[in-house]
Length: 233
Image (cartoon, rainbow, N blue to C red; front, side, top):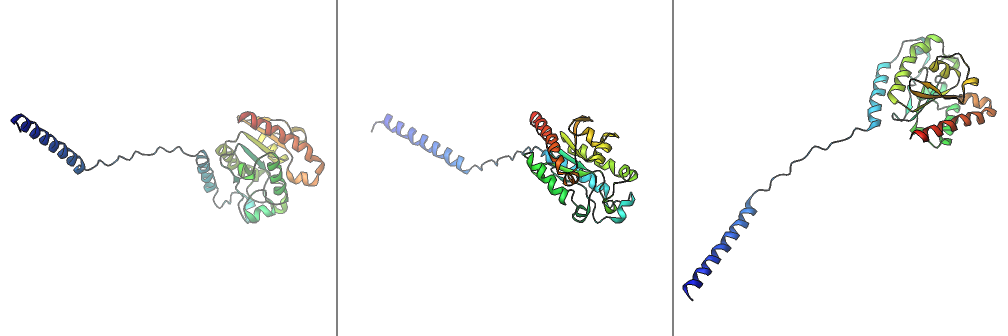
């Protein structure tokens, strides 16, 4: 073997050793730990709306601000989707609602649930509340001082949920929210602008149970709400 061949072989061997050393070095180097990037989470709109509702309920506490507290079993705050596009406002809790602590669970509530389902919605997809949170004795009309005491909490609920449409059920809910003396017979079926929201006055389910012939006009009112919600979605 010539000296040149010997030199080439030596260089080749040396290069192979250098390559092997490099590979071994890379194998020996500790791998850099992957830096965990914080995951950006978009807050759930429903969660955002639920928090102020809870704050309102906490503010009410074990309310003794008016005389209705003396006869109640439960405060009936409200129920449903905190992020609802549609909100129903009734008058006040009855016997079943007082016992269960949830609005519209008696016969009138069962009819309201059917009305909601006829609109293509689930009860859990809307928000339901009342003008007063405690049952008036013998289901009488809430008195002006009771309405005045409780109304600020309902206004806060509406602001927290921020629905696109509010359906007021019956005379008291409609007249109180809209601050009018006009009756439901004249107001039903016509949208009213209220603080940037659309309010649709219609009949209370309890009234419909006593007057089944008024279910059709009520359904006409609800159909207008369906169309508005479709247009704004």
